[in-house]
Amino acid sequence: MTDQPILVNGTWQAAQNPAGSFKATNPATKEPLPHSFPVSSWDDLQAMLDAAQAAVIELRQTPRSAIADFLDKYAAAIEARKDALVEISNLETGLPAGTRLPGELGRTTNQLQQAAQAVRSGTWLTATIDTAANIRAMYGPLNGPVIVFGPNNFPLAFNGVSGGDMAAAIAAGNPVIAKAHPSHPRTTQLLAEAALEAIEASGVPQAMVQMFYHTSNENGVKLVSHPITGATGFTGSRVGGMALKSAADAAGKPIYLEMSSINPIVILPGTLQERLDDVAQELFASCTLGAGQFCTNPGLVLMLDTAETQPFIHQVETLFEGSDPGLLLNEGGIGSLQRGIQTWEQNGATRVTGGQPMASGGFRFQNTLYTVDGATFLQNAESLQVEAFGAASLIVIASGLSQLIACLDALEGNLTGSIYSANNGADDALYTDVAKVLRSGVGRLLNDKMPTGVAVSSAMMHGGPYPATGHPGFTSVGIPASIHRFAMWQSYDNVRQHRLPPELQDKNPTGSMWRFIDKEWSQADLN
Image (tube, rainbow, N blue to C red; front, top):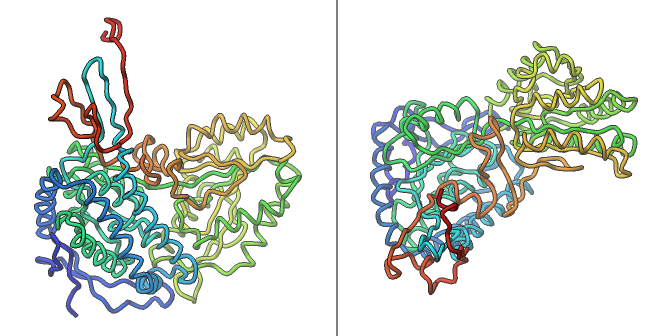
């Protein structure tokens, strides 16, 4: 069977000297799907880089309105392919076609439209004018394309060719080279077809979006560190992310990573006295949602040892055992879960329920719950924070507040942290002590709410300290903040009015937002 073509500089073409081919697998049947896709050699990637470099130059003369039009037309082209995208995404990932995938498609088009709105409003530029010193600055595009690696668990909303990283990079005025995920290549191909349709209808450079399906690890490292590359966005495993980061850092290239997070949930004692069953149900629902394949899945629960602790654990156990496990995205998910759980066991955790793959029904793994006492956790904190990516959670039982705080102090950086507290105020003092420690270790702090679900909001922080991401100062969700990852701060010192970008001129014809600094500088200000 002939391999499917890749998208290079506005044309679909056969891969050059491919290093093999692959097929996606239906996780519900474990059978390969019909289409075959090439593993690109460096020849393909070099062709994309060359085309992207030409697009960078062309974009300097491209009106921002054309970029906004592209994003809007792309959203419309995706919506027009809704039925086909949901169908093939379901076959490639096993994610439900009834609600999950249509909802994710709506989120995908929404974030593209939000990016278009940000381009038109110009608010993300943060135009800043110091009238006294006649220095002006604003954000602008990078001097190279953005490489985007998408994950396996969101085939639409985080896809390399349509997700938040892609939308942010395009909004900043950069061309994108997208790598498909091998778990859903046909989905990515259909999205790239929609992107090309939008390119041709909006007048942006033909190489605005390019796409390949897979390549070797060595080529991936070479791509993120290449002199032409402007920056990289990556969502995936810590091992893969750190390998790319090492290469990008050595070459002085920005890279933004979303990697590993266990999203600690602290359940304070008064909560269980008030609503034990409700919190158990919320934990169960959050942990098993999408078979636990969310980057915000609650993989670690911390509690004090009280009279309600064991009844709570028993209730969660009952819920886990009473629910059929969901489909995993691919066979690799089973091995990943087994390795994570084995590491827990080797470091003192005790199995409550689950822990084994299912024998039938596709790629499935038992809903899994483990416990460990606080002292053992502190002795083996690094190993007991290994991510088990799926419907698996580890409950840490602390002997007292000081041990609970010590466990929180031992946590690595995470995307989220949640604190459940009593409604009657009984936990207020404990909340204050816990929040002081947890706040600086997570990107998003939640109260009385599970972390699964990331709203596409300008106030959202989907990031956090290492190893959740590679840099705690940036978010991959939330426009306009997410755009700034793929932009550079550009200053103009004593540049004549007619030579300035319109947004920085005294009589701004674009209506963009300004931030003025108007003062006389003293010598102290300059020292």
